[in-house]
Image 1: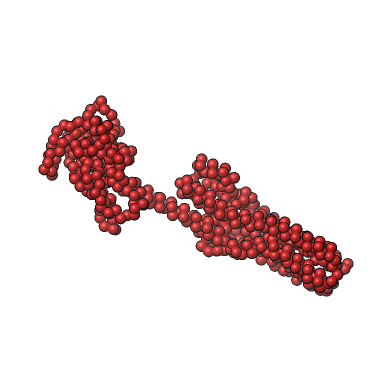
Image 2 (image 1 turned 180 degrees about the vertical axis):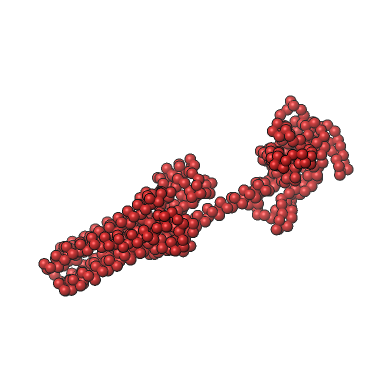
Length: 536
């Protein structure tokens, strides 16, 4: 498939997979004769009408050949007088030609009327879908009617002209009719795959239409094995009844029927394998794309049997995966992708647990004045650019933006996913934010505080609405440090506990300034700031 129904084009991986599969993605219906999934309406109409016509002509020609072989080679001892010889030599071929013309006018044109919705480019109704799924069976009934009429007609003619041959003629024409019906059904079902796929595009099948896999297998068996075996049995019965068949003639009969069984049986088994494997192969190729992350893939549903249910089931699975990924992405945007991924693995029930974490608190300076003196759209744009820098650096250093509170942001390192050197990562992220904000969002001044220590992490709220967060002294300390940071050069401070918990390389980038008792606390906190411009 060059283009899925969602409109996305093949990636390089898809093209490589297509070459590896021998170009099967270019033949989404199992055969290059059926064209591409996105072929235009005119090409589709010409293709379907041409294939249906060829299918019906081929089926009737094979039926006529079966009659000739049965009456001249297989059934021993069969003889015609002058009048019946004229009927067999002229009447039967003429009837086959007439049957082909009538079948084409009656069957093919009627089928095109049923498929008018596809030609007119309008969505199919429920009635259109049902009628489309029955087209192959309708064409088969047309052939059954014509060959049934031939059986009755030629039996009546021979009953008048040569009564001794009535049973033989009825048997041979009737048996040929069975062959024609089987071939007509199989080839018609094959020819209609592109239209069936369009009919099932918006409302995939929920039940088996037509004969199903078992019925199709029985048709293949009757065509490849049943007919030759019946011919052998008939030849043996005729030889016993007439008692005038030589051993050589009976041997020729058995050889001919054995050859027919081998050749036709092989062709039938190949067609059977292709009809069965093509839908399975389309599902396999679709699964290969899903495995590579292409969740927008959707395969045509063109088989009315259980294999079509398999194709429809794959599309429902892919749609479910797309919806799951969309919800997961939306969920991740709200709570952080780390929390979302952890929720997928562990479920939504995050019990509270004590974690060593590092916390960054970032808060704008003068946000009230900012909102009062600027248009709302400008304020929103400014906040979005401000938070873009914060989120970018938090993500780059492996942290989680836990929540936005108005014009402030709280980020956590070490929960829900454990991190090596979580304090060092938080300090490095804070320095990067303090460096970028004056350059990229000079209209904003923000205080940044970093703290570290043990905190309780888990889901807070009710089963109907909760959020993942951290509660504890590091959070409170980071918020108080942020207030202090608004009044110091560089607007970035960290606690001594956070710097001490970081690795040596990151700790060396900070220097102590003073010890202060933060608001709401009783003990003094040693405050550190970045060591200076000589360090990155």
